[in-house]
Image (cartoon, rainbow, N blue to C red; front, side, top):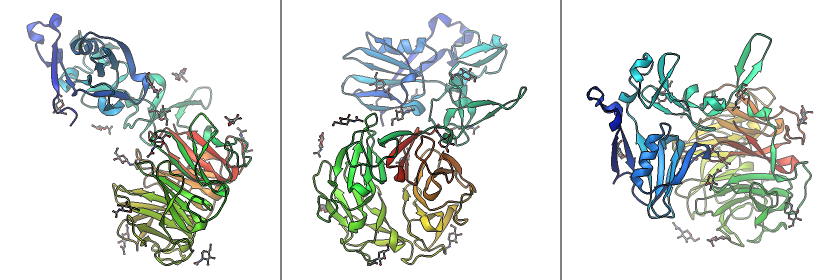
Amino acid sequence: MLFNRYLKIVILFLWLIVPAYLQTIWQSQTNVSEAGLEYSAFDNQTLLFQYSAKSLILCTAQCFAIANCRTFDFNAQTRRCRLFEGDLSTSGSIIASASTQSRVGSIQVSPAQFAALGAPCSSCQGNRYLVCIEATCQCLPHTYFDGSVCKSQKLLGAKCNMSYACRTDLNYTCLPRKQCGRKCVTRTDEFFKEFYFVAASLQLGTTVGGRSNGAPGNSLDALKTPAGLFIDPYGFIYVSDLANNRVIRLREGSLNGTIVAGDGTADATNARLYQPAGIYLDSAMNMYISDSKNYRVMLWKQNASTGIRVAGTGISGSLLSQLNNSGAIILDSVGNMYISDTTNHRVLKWALNASSGTIVAGTGVAGPNSNQLNTPYGIYLDETNSYLYIADTLNHRIQRYRLGNPNNGTTVAGGNGGGTGNNQFNAPVGIYLSNKTGALYVADHLNSRIQRWDTAATNGVTVSGITNVAGANASLLNLPYSVILNVNETFLYVTDFNNNRVQRFTLI
Ligand SMILES: *[C@@H]1O[C@H](CO)[C@@H](O)[C@H](O)[C@H]1NC(C)=O
Ligand SMILES: *[C@@H]1O[C@H](CO)[C@@H](O)[C@H](O)[C@H]1NC(C)=O
Ligand SMILES: *[C@@H]1O[C@H](CO)[C@@H](O)[C@H](O)[C@H]1NC(C)=O
Ligand SMILES: *[C@@H]1O[C@H](CO)[C@@H](O)[C@H](O)[C@H]1NC(C)=O
Ligand SMILES: *[C@@H]1O[C@H](CO)[C@@H](O)[C@H](O)[C@H]1NC(C)=O
Ligand SMILES: *[C@@H]1O[C@H](CO)[C@@H](O)[C@H](O)[C@H]1NC(C)=O
Ligand SMILES: *[C@@H]1O[C@H](CO)[C@@H](O)[C@H](O)[C@H]1NC(C)=O
Ligand SMILES: *[C@@H]1O[C@H](CO)[C@@H](O)[C@H](O)[C@H]1NC(C)=O
Ligand SMILES: *[C@@H]1O[C@H](CO)[C@@H](O)[C@H](O)[C@H]1NC(C)=O
Ligand SMILES: *[C@@H]1O[C@H](CO)[C@@H](O)[C@H](O)[C@H]1NC(C)=O
Ligand SMILES: *[C@@H]1O[C@H](CO)[C@@H](O)[C@H](O)[C@H]1NC(C)=O
Ligand SMILES: *[C@@H]1O[C@H](CO)[C@@H](O)[C@H](O)[C@H]1NC(C)=O
């Protein structure tokens, strides 16, 4: 508990006190964290003011003096006092500070302070949290009424459940997928303006790996049929560069990558790879690579110059110890590996250090029944709900399995045969589930598009690419393979397999 030893600071606005007002509305409280912590805003736009304060109390008082200030931090060593709008719970997080004398404070507001909302302006005269607009008491700019108090409006990408929860002054609204994003205004004719939400497809992709014109190569600024994709918490992009038999790490802003596994030559020694497909990094930055044509999964520990075989025997086969063209790989929080064993039509789970796997989905025989798979590639583990999602590629559907029940998959997207319809896929390969909205993003490989299926939807929406139009300009994709969102879900990344590049799209 960060606030276990909280200090409670109560500031009474003495100059406002007349007996009738000696009530909670004139009183605000703040909670101050223990020392050694500072505030990290999700978005720097919420920083209102930064100055040098003499003490924590003065920094706190300064926050009270600005009605929009809801969070602040003060470093007693450097005396830096930073004031932010944005409620602590939704607009940022408390992180460890390099200074042992830094603390975070948050203003506590209570419903009583907003009781006059909607009433004639005489009821909120002098109330610092309400303002008179059109003769009634309203929330201050940059705040909205959530049913109990006026809260700070949220910025791009934040979770929301009503349009006013988002910064209306910046034209953000609560998008249908319950995330703050831009509102577009389209004039459909002279007299009527219609508001609607544009999907990210209307945006152009930015190349963040490989060459934007799609040309393949094996230099450090080129890729050749990139397949797997992973983004670490620091924003580094890891790409399994399949036909170059290597894994490349890229930093946004530079198209020049670094080789982090393999050296370009295909063979089965521990320092080399042969058509690496899926890739996954654990929290210790150990890299797991599905080394597809070596029929094994390799673990490259952080900075290692060679890998260790952790699944598969190196010989293709269908025993539980073997793999045949492994696709995606993902680890759970205790180190179990889930591997899509593509041409064995099954998904295997390998416990830590196990020498063979157990079947978690599929029978090993290709088929369309609910207990079967046909050439599964992408997988996504929703550990919280014990679900495993599988891109059942040649069945043109996404199956969801409850962990522990390998005999019963439920189709949650597609399943209407291969095709270009919005209720169909044509060989879905990569999948990713939004942690904020539950929406499923699917790299619809042969349709050269990325589809988003909201929870329980019966149709998908194209969010990048144009259905069944393969090409290399900024609006198009050519056989997308993997899809992934960054942690704050503002960007969608795609390995654009046949364009030999990694594209980034703004999601909102
Ligand atoms: C301060 O935080 C603590 C722990 O989260 C909480 O129990 C307490 O109610 C908070 N104080 C105020 C004034 O909200
Ligand atoms: C989300 O993360 C990206 C980098 O991955 C960063 O550029 C962006 O500012 C972040 N956006 C928000 C709203 O936190
Ligand atoms: C926010 O501001 C801090 C301090 O000025 C800076 O270190 C950080 O990189 C900024 N973050 C973003 C996402 O711009
Ligand atoms: C939005 O969510 C808040 C709590 O997160 C809840 O109190 C409120 O009723 C919700 N509003 C709507 C319109 O669903
Ligand atoms: C918001 O939208 C209006 C109408 O389209 C436009 O005039 C204004 O510049 C936009 N504001 C911002 C901050 O984008
Ligand atoms: C990549 O690095 C090479 C030298 O290492 C340099 O010549 C080239 O301009 C760089 N390319 C990009 C896109 O940064
Ligand atoms: C890996 O290398 C980075 C920088 O090159 C270094 O900071 C880090 O400590 C190294 N990690 C291990 C486990 O050697
Ligand atoms: C592995 O899969 C391929 C199809 O890609 C198949 O032709 C081959 O027989 C399989 N090998 C074994 C040993 O099962
Ligand atoms: C797994 O094997 C590694 C060595 O490969 C060893 O360091 C580790 O302790 C083992 N873990 C368990 C749980 O057996
Ligand atoms: C399979 O799952 C469906 C829906 O999740 C459920 O209705 C059905 O009873 C399950 N069947 C078996 C055999 O587990
Ligand atoms: C999703 O969010 C929850 C809560 O923030 C977190 O515990 C969980 O690890 C996240 N899952 C993924 C896959 O990011
Ligand atoms: C890319 O090509 C498609 C199909 O010809 C076209 O509709 C789209 O406008 C083009 N996009 C760009 C940015 O040129």
